[in-house]
Amino acid sequence: MGKQPSEVKCNITTIGGGTGTFNVLSGLGKNRHLNLAAIVTVADSGGSTGELRDEFGILPPGDVRRAIVALAEDTEVVRRLFEYRFKEGRRIAGHTIGNLLLTALTDIMGDFERGIEELSEMFSVHGKVIPVTLDNVSLGVTLENGERILGETDIDVPKHDGNVPIRDAFLLGGGQLNPRAKEAIENSDYVIVGPGDLYTSIVPNLLCGGMVDALRSSPAKIIYVCNIMTKHGETDGFAVEDFVRVLEQYLGEGTIDYLLVNNGELRASLVRKYEQEGKAPVRLRDGPALLRKGIKLVERDFTSETDYIRHDPRKLARTIEDFASGWIR
Image (cartoon, rainbow, N blue to C red; front, side, top):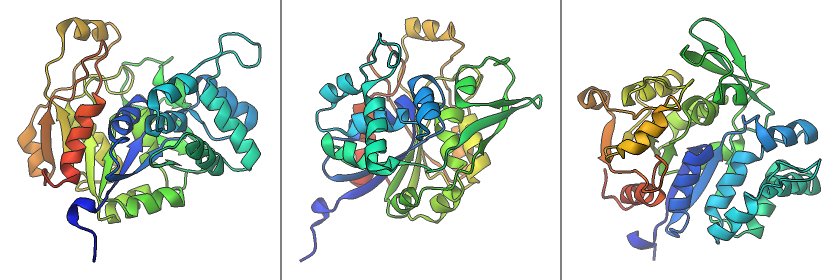
């Protein structure tokens, strides 16, 4: 006899990086009815990640580390260990243990992906963590005034005039889609894109050669989780529709099936705090226009009740689980 419907696992793949992907994965990681795969960007070039990348020639470990932490069996203990950052020591000051472990395992196993697999097994990771490409890529953007900014860290924290909008993004150093990432997308029921910094966590994945074809040919439904706040230097003044416009610049129209948008109330004191950093709430201007494009809107309260404006992992997970169980169609 075949499996009963309740026993059939749903295949979910996430695409992104940073805190956004961590929140999605940490919410879903305890659900054993889901087969999870996390495709993460390897364009990071700052901090501990950048130093290890330059010194040892490995792919950036930072976003991979966060995904492993999110999916580990004992997330809190692993998080405290992996995120522990040495404050002293001439050679190791500023480095996290998680980055050093992944660097060491890459050297021992002779391969970055095998290092990830070994680390995942050591910490009972529920799911697969997959670098989007195995090429040593660098991220660049072209601003509306024609200026080119090279390096993820200088895009993330702009040293240029951050008020000048980004026209487009590009990769240097190749960037062919990892075959394991392609396989995960092809076998997915749902692909979750975002949330995360648009040009430094999301778009670098979409720029990889073969990614767009994989997403467009996959039977999976594509769900985009829109950010709650804008980010200075990347998405100043953006509404929900602007995030979709940029994604469609790389994916083409008709690729996004569902759009998750926060409609929860944001605390005024927190909004004022974020405004000092040049950030503002992302608003929905014209929902019917998105519906006419064939994108189904799912508006819910996704806000965290912490002192940060970000997506709550459990609220996100409950919504994605509603897709997996067939409640949302």
